[in-house]
Amino acid sequence: MIPICDLKEQYRTLREQMMRAVDDVFSSGHFINGPNVKALEAEIAQYVGAKHAVALNSGTDALHLALRALDIGPGDEVITTPFTFVATTEAIGIVGATPVFVDIDPRTYNLDVAQIEAAMTPRTRAILPVHLYGCPAPIEEILDIARRHDVAVVEDCAQSIGAKVGEKYTGTFGQFGCFSFFPSKNLGAYGDGGMLVTDDETLAARARSLRGHGGRIKYYHEELGVNSRLDEVQAAILRVKLPYLEAWIEKRRTAAGRYTAAFAGSQLQVPIEPADARHAYHQYTLRVPDRDRVQQDMKAAGVESMIYYPVPLHLQKVHAMLGLREGAFPEAERAAREVLSIPMFPELRPDIQEQVVNAVFAACRREAVA
Image 1 (cartoon, helix red, strand yellow):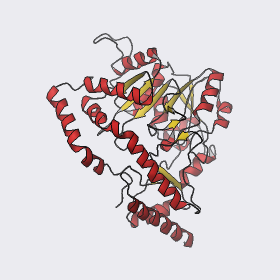
Image 2 (cartoon, rainbow, N blue to C red; image 1 turned 90 degrees about the vertical axis):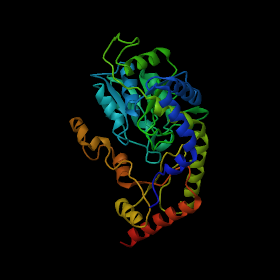
Image 3 (cartoon, rainbow, N blue to C red; image 1 turned 30 degrees about the vertical axis):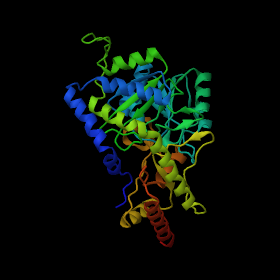
Image 4 (tube, helix red, strand yellow; image 1 turned 180 degrees about the horizontal axis):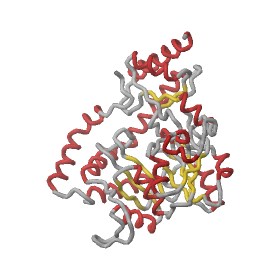
């Protein structure tokens, strides 16, 4: 089976460095908030071009604590997309705020900026765009709206580390950028992990306090916080990987270019790269007719694929209290019926991609006959 994401080759290449880094942590006896965590924070901040970085135990907590640090809570509304992973709205709900959805652009799968202002109310406190699949959202336009309405921007960069708009990395435009180091991400740990970045020293200090039980000094607690510390082992692993990230992204982009060339002239919708942006290609996502049948046929042919995401958030049970029904966000709903992500990872060889492309075309031909 050709996997959607293969982490084994990456590990084989870096195994000796990984073993040394992990052994150094075990030998030190220092596992929480140690030198690797502090060094990783500095290195991530330098990489993306932010003044401050705060290491956390997940991308979900990055979103959650960003909203907490901005004092967003009950009675407040946050504009976001219905076409993303539930962690985005989970974070909004955890702080007691209400997600307000805006439909997506059908070509990029990101927020349709033309619809944002119509969804805003006096209770709107923030816009939370997601740079989905590694494709930068129209962040400059979003920032312009946010400035005019005096609301914050929190970027969900769980899939977009290394993506750029112009010369700036995603995560450095709003008040906060929120990253995930889930193992399958472009920069993945060997467990959960996350990071906040910001240029605001006060917000960074608040986030650090919140991640450590709401206190800036040990055993002195100013507010209710959480335990959201990235451990030293994961930080050490991420520090081994970080110097390779740019090369891995370029390999993803090269592989994406091969896919796009192979699908040229077909009826399949391929990813696009917005003007003046660098897509990080966390996923390479097609739109396919009769998607579920195509996925089954590809699996039978030995090619794994994934559906990100099969049910938009406004139709999920967790958000039933919002009272939204099918038809509320037609582009998100159509995408949920049609999207199919195919194998994408830096070590993806051209011959393997050829097998993937052949499986896609064969499955689509069978669908057309059926």
